Length: 336
Image (cartoon, rainbow, N blue to C red; front, side, top):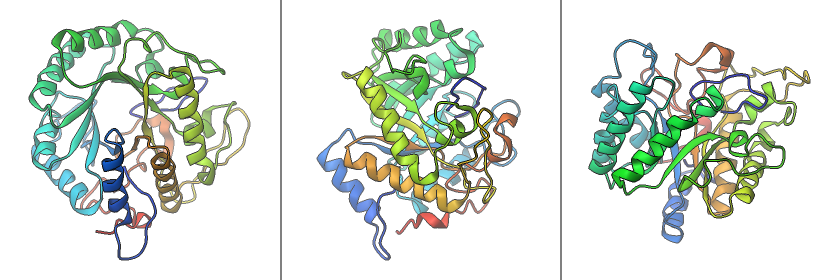
């Protein structure tokens, strides 16, 4: 969920049940990994916190990446992250993740600058081969179709083909919203990427549906987990031979009690706040665990740079704040 555009449907690990004094979450995670090695419970990670932005200026310093990952390891149960980009200093994330025994889903950022895409592809191949035990999955882009329609499908395909030719060992996909993976059809159907990828990553955000969609204009925090599962199953039904992962889901923790109004229906069903964020994270991972499904919650640390069309809510998606001391949502009860 890096940048949103007003599409017909614009959408863009690890909480289960908690009991005081016991890290039930961690116990569940260990049990699930033993039962089904493919189950992933991860958190989206970007070091563009504070005044940093991916659009210009200096890249995130190594010291900041170390600080954020230490916070993640020390204060949350997450041992898997999903990253956005492999150049401009972001390559250090993989060194830092390896040192902390974190697993990584690595997104190669694909956009309209072909030369930069080539640089990302080259760096992605090198990193995938260098960090074979750390990088577990690869994606050629995130929400490229959501941002640009079909204009850069060829760049996604070029990236996928480059991964094949380089014989990287990790499974490859391209990540996009569930709507794009349904080929923009009310009855979900395969896209032209379905045959090209090893797995499918879908982003599902009822919060943005509540703002932009006439199809799903009113999903509350209590209903969000069921909404996530329903969209996952639609994409799975259209792609029965693929492993489907929810690569982004979440809810803003603020401004507290803030709400979006649907531009088509006038409804306002989404209420922001730390309690609703915690409810959605916990209930979604619980339902995914029951189905032995993977998921990535968006996001680890809030980012102030987020685009203006995300309104007042763009900077509130983190489970932890984006400024020192990076305190985390206390409604989540990360028992250590």
